[in-house]
Length: 128
Image 1 (cartoon, rainbow, N blue to C red):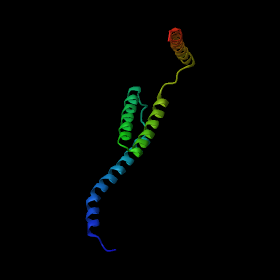
Image 2: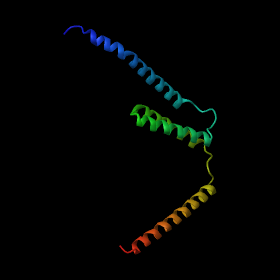
Image 3: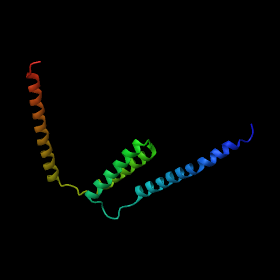
């Protein structure tokens, strides 16, 4: 088995593409780790959190569609970190506000349940 000049030429053609790919992967890893570790000087606002969350979700979908599972996983980790930061910065509701919110949610759920039960009754009473 001797030296094959064809293999060397093929390697030389592929090397720039591989270098670009490795460089892109390294830059992505550095940027992702910097984003994940960057401490927020001020608590993020609700609009800022929603915008960043939407952008990350779009990037995750794009990475998934392109088969970039490592990038998708890194973006998902960044999204989880963002959600944690944003939830921590939200002002905590007092007891009365939480009770009011839960009562409102219960009223909405009851109305939805009544509507679904009415639809079920109508469906059962229909002739086949």
